[in-house]
Length: 79
Image (cartoon, rainbow, N blue to C red; front, side, top):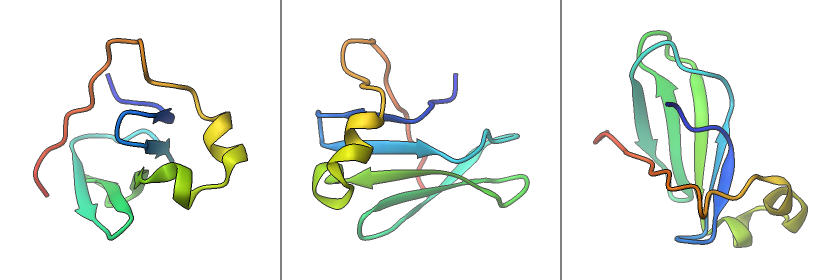
């Protein structure tokens, strides 16, 4: 199951889904987090933002669903 947008206090990470990928996802590391691209189309599909509570406005962080308590995990493939 692909992750939708969320925020987790564990690691202070926000993930913002831009669109659903058609296939495997490739991640590119940035100084602020990761950009996820659909390997088939090259389209941007999501942004993982580290230190989200410092980078994003409080309103944006508060609007994101919380991941805690859902038993979900996010797996990353090496870039």
